[in-house]
Image (cartoon, rainbow, N blue to C red; front, top):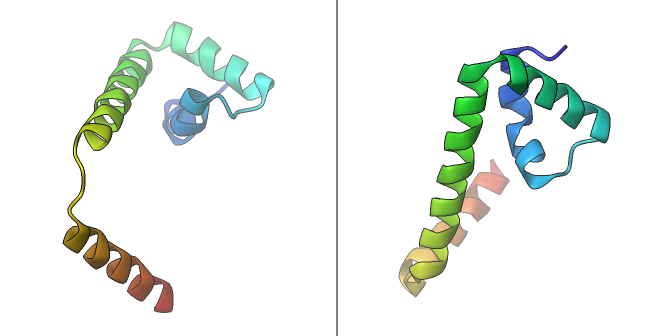
Length: 78
């Protein structure tokens, strides 16, 4: 049986549908007995939907894109 911490660690892959069927089934079993985790899952999914819509609706200015690329490239050098 999966515990709450493991559940949180697997949420992204679960919501993307990339977990093995056995792991997904274990998570769903955990959700059926854990109202806090199912509540967190619902919030997580809603946040993901809102974030994706927001990103698509707003274009990032070119200057900000360049600064972000530079930042990521500098992190790779560390």
